[in-house]
Picture 1 (cartoon, rainbow, N blue to C red):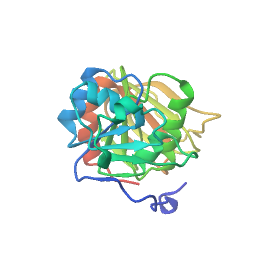
Picture 2 (picture 1 turned 180 degrees about the vertical axis):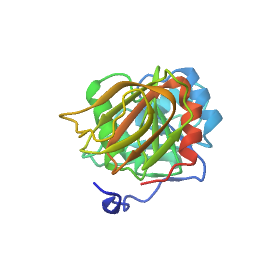
Picture 3 (picture 1 turned 90 degrees about the vertical axis):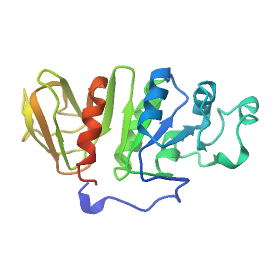
Picture 4 (picture 1 turned 45 degrees about the vertical axis):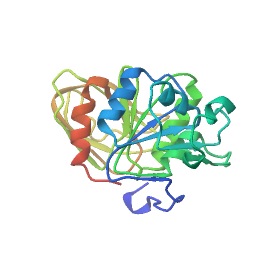
Length: 232
C-alpha cells in the first residue's frame, strides 16, 4: 500500500481532541498504566469492558465505545448514559470501533496486549488497516506501533528494536546493528525482530505495514519522536 492509497474516510468521530487520548481495553491494565494515561492524555476512553478498570481506579471515562457485550448491568448503572456509545457492528473489534471513532493526534492504548493471542493479532490488524489513526500500544514490558513514513528516535545504544511486517514493505534504516535496507519484508517471509540500536535510530518506510516494538521505558523518547514524524 502506498501513501497515495491510504483510505481516510471512516465513521463519524465520537471523541475529538487536539491532544493525545488514552484508550483502555478490558485486558490487564496496571494502575501504572492508568496513571501514565492520565499524565499524557486529556481524554480517557474505555473500550467496552475497559470501563471497569477506569472506574475502579477512580476515573470516569469521557466515552465508552464498543458493542457493550462486556459491560455488565452493574457497571453500566455507574456510567452516565450520555457517554455510552454502543456500536452494533460485529465485523470489527471493540479496539477498531474505538480507533476509528477517536479523532486525535495520538491514541495511547493499554489493556489490549494481555489475554488471548487472537485479540492481540486483531489489534495489530486494525492498526495496519487504519494507518492514519496513530496509535501506540502499551504493554507490561514493551510498546508497539505502526511505523510512520519517517521516524527518528534518540534511543540509546543497546536498546532492543524489533520490526515485524504485516504487509510487504521496504524499510531503510540508520543506527541499527543489523541494517535492514533492501530486505524484502513480508509477514510470511523476512522479519526483523530482536535487532538492537547502536545509537539514534532512523527508519523510513515506503508504505504502512511495518510494526515496531521497543522497551516500555522508551515511551517518552518515542512520543517525542512521533511529535515530529510525518503521518500516513
